[in-house]
Image 1 (spheres, helix red, strand yellow):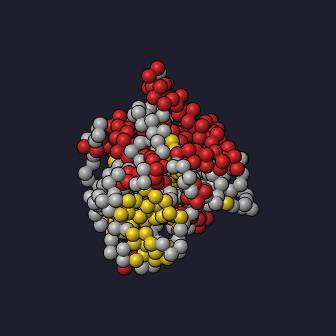
Image 2 (cartoon, rainbow, N blue to C red):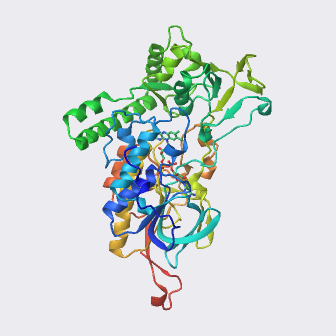
Image 3 (cartoon, rainbow, N blue to C red):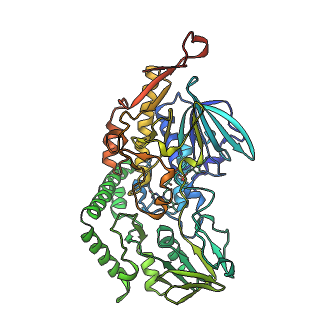
Length: 512
Ligand SMILES: Cc1cc2nc3c(=O)[nH]c(=O)nc-3n(C[C@H](O)[C@H](O)[C@H](O)COP(=O)(O)OP(=O)(O)OC[C@H]3O[C@@H](n4cnc5c(N)ncnc54)[C@H](O)[C@@H]3O)c2cc1C
């Protein structure tokens, strides 16, 4: 590790009193907003709170073998801080090092409060403030803030999605979910079955393959799996001839374009994209391998997230006979493995249930406005970062079809401009309002993956036009969030009138 920023001047006492902006979540999104606030609005007071005992969110939580990004860090990294490692696809510890550097460079450690879980947030229009209830070591306490920012990610930190399998209790070996990987789990010389075919399964299989007796990926249906170079020759070449910032900017721009081109190709010409992916898979796998059984999904490319395998490591493990893929359905767990519908049995000492995440919007925080409880599903998403009917709150929710953080960076920038605009005009509240009650609604997460469909009712919705659509395209958001004005007919600004000045005003809020 280059620097452990949290050794520096991090508060040990609980957060108390009032801050202008409270950021919930000290993952890559929350730390990102910390940078933008510190550098563009130095007069604002702010704090980051996180329920965990470490920064980094996703990149600290997951501890399974091989844990890494599947995005390239030139687009997953922050626009303001060049990614200078040779590896474009990075291991979790490299991403954590990078985040610690940002905390160090922006002197954020003194603003980070760990073990601080936000339980609820109640907005009062009279004071234009949130009262936020937090929990630390079982004790509850309150702080206030003017603006609340949810950088809570999108899934439940308490545990992953764990479907019940018949006969689980009969199994004599170890069952592990990747979200709660036991420290020091010894898999040397063991037979391992990984249930699932998503990003996690394709990461851990090659990472474990050299040590186990054999590892099997057991999937109900295939996913698209694409090899990617771990080291990007263009990025590393540019770094040799250009200063780091220029090389990073050029690589980032190129990779955004490349990602968009591939996504569009997949959406517009799925048959061609399917053929290309198949040809790449055939080339990477042993001759005569049953590609159409194990790597030919029923859905079209990019209708669900594509799984990346750096330097084709999964395919290499298969070619070396260390790993195999079985496409079948589970009947039940037995004492020594898994019985399949085909009648075959897979022997196992360890079963890894890479069955995915349990989604959870806004970190499970209960929200009310003037005493009225707000269900996120009743709100429409405004410009991908605020919710209709909920004042002074914004959130980070990135792309599902490219690097999450590309969107979050634009959101942070736009939010800082919005806060500056409010200060300039003396506004203390801002709330998005849907003027057309007949507007058609769609799920915010319009992505037919199982883990998303399971949770769609918990998430807000999106509309069909204006600022009410959730774009999954960097350049559309670039227009909207970077170039677009923060003034918008859908936003209502207001100024809370302090008690002392109020005479004959029934509501504490004067609207603009
Ligand atoms: C294994 C894995 C690999 C991934 N790889 C990629 C990738 O390569 N590219 C990509 O674009 N995306 C990837 N993702 C998605 C990834 O989660 C995001 O890209 C990104 O890391 C999310 O960052 P975040 O800061 O928004 O949220 P998170 O990293 O989830 O951090 C949220 C933080 O909020 C805290 N928090 C939540 N609720 C509360 C609360 N109520 N009170 C206090 N604190 C709270 C959590 O403790 C956590 O620290 C991956 C996800 C997983 C699970």
